[in-house]
Length: 97
Image (cartoon, rainbow, N blue to C red; front, side, top):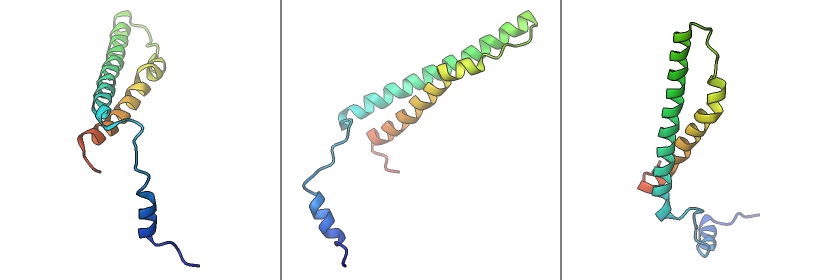
């Protein structure tokens, strides 16, 4: 039982070119948009934490922990937007990792 040589597999796959799901021309705008959204959401997450901290200092109350409410609202979407935006930016500018 002999395995098919790699060259034969390469030649057979040459008739089916790779087509990315997102065209090459749209990768940079999508990456830039995702990274901008990530920076915006990260800023909102940080500002909401700062505002909450200042309100607790003024009232001298025990802090109500809104971190768990802000995390799925700002934190998780920000990290996902940054992750996908970074990958698309790497693909768009031609950095091969």
